[in-house]
Length: 334
Image (cartoon, rainbow, N blue to C red; front, top):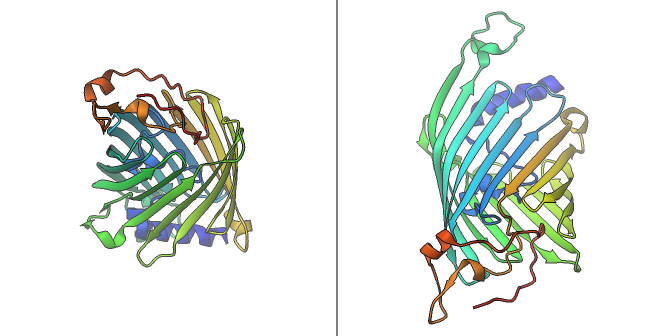
């Protein structure tokens, strides 16, 4: 049975490797991996690293690692670097992309951002290394390594208690046919921050992935943060698997997380569990942004605007010692 799964996996990857975008159970921490519009919202300088190992015990099962570095140039502009490596069987894809996001602040608590990225994908097919029962099988006699141009587009809306983002992580197909909208994958990510007492923050999060003529895939994550430092996670993945995990704020500048998926139903004994590890750094975190007032300039007429000279030299007083987002509005100074 495991052999059949692996064969199906290889065939599927050979057909769909151009759009093999992954879903992470802890993507609410690192949405910039799939959506360039959401970069650097939770920190001035940020770095997110996620590693996911699927279907433990099955040779050739998917392994994915993603790195997203982000920098907030000022309150209206952010840039980032996205590095992504995915392996399925003998197929490997490594991507590098530069990201840019522009933010339109509706007021001092609501913001809408548009983001784009452009870079390159290196696709490697190492079929020649496959061990086969038939020596010299021509179907497994060749390998290749090609580079393709790629890009992404996304939008992101956020308030102290709500966020929602949508993106197309791959605008171009890395199989030589270029700009091909029918092959696009679409991502939607949304969630709430709800105070459940002084020491508890409840963060339900939904992630949806879909494409034309394919089933909708989704994750429901229920995250409960205790004293803004420690969180417990439970959830469900549409491929009939359970999600569980935890995350910790180990310092004002670093947090770590772990989650696993356990398949249930008829495939439970063959697919095995999937593990995911997250490491995040920020200098500093400001996830308790109940107001943008400290990050914006207020003119003589009381209207919000941009002061780029002031922003480029400003010192951040908020050291970001909140882990769950504190949705209580702080006193706003003028």
